[in-house]
Image 1 (tube, chains in turn purple, cyan):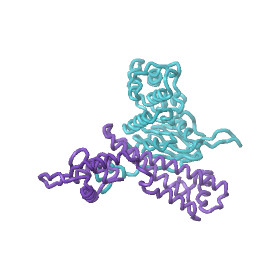
Image 2 (tube, chains in turn brown, cyan):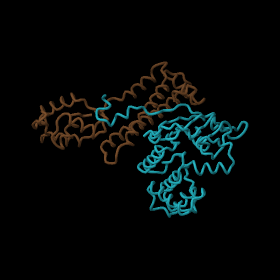
Image 3 (spheres, rainbow over the protein chains, first blue to last red):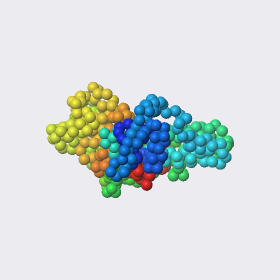
Image 4 (cartoon, each protein chain N blue to C red):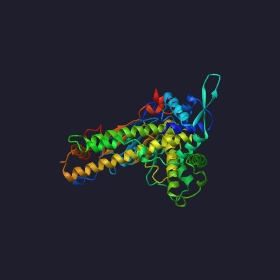
Length: 200
Length: 248
């Protein structure tokens, strides 16, 4: 997430001081990405250095206000117009973990999948509860929460797919290959209705 | 979202088994399922095709009888009831949304929804007033006098939902209730179901969609006729809408 552009987006509506920027950003995004105040002030300093914001006076409580400059508005317009590239997103640790799990002998791949799916479902329930409480007028927050809901759903579907692939491989190779001890267990669990219960 | 509070069991499945066929052709649809759903709670049931989800729902609603164990609705063991008593329990206490709607083709939407109330002794006029309110809730007030074959699949599904929610049903059983609906209407239906549970009903939602199951307080997983696990939400999300809350 670009803190720099997020702050510019809030400033585009009018001058703000640091705490206001943080509160408004969190309100608009459903507080799903909490900012710490130190991060806000560091970013404001950089934005000022780059000519995207400028000081706009102080109030009686000595709050220092910031104003977006024309260059800042141009930078913001350009950010909105540019698609978020795949390279800008963090690497998917789960995909890497599973890739490694299927190559390391003795790792319970099915167990990893089950635990992850359970975690993703609980998160999905959490986000759905947040969404259920949002009013119809809270569109910005709803969009952020829905993005997380769709990501959780995609992760669960992908995990189902992984489980299916691991099972198929276990069947075709008779559970012989590295990383397939877990697959063998998954197959056994599927056949007998999973005596281990707590992993599905 | 969680309305679970009273802890009063509305539905109890105790060691429920259901075996179809005999001898070598026997199919064990359920193999000893224990499940309690309390007032105010919505439980989602997930599992692969053929895992026993729909069988569980039929047994819970008294539409089918178990071959072992017992089904108890609000303290009444269904096996101890006569056919007439069982029908009365289904009519008064249980709202059921079937995968294939099960609307009566010769009745209008409002008549379909009003039918269980009329069978329960309400006057036709009062039952219609209630039916129109239930149809309003699912956004179909204007279609009240249309017949099922004059409606889309999604509209028929919503009529079926209105029929399940009418009256003071304390147990709402739904089998893929959003199957024929677009995303927005499907979500509206889930919100209705959630609301009814928050108001004190117990609900069971059979679904294969994780996004739908997430509206429940608990998700149970069924595989090969057995409940193999369950998932419940954490408390963390309570903080998500409080600025700085997730920081604390």
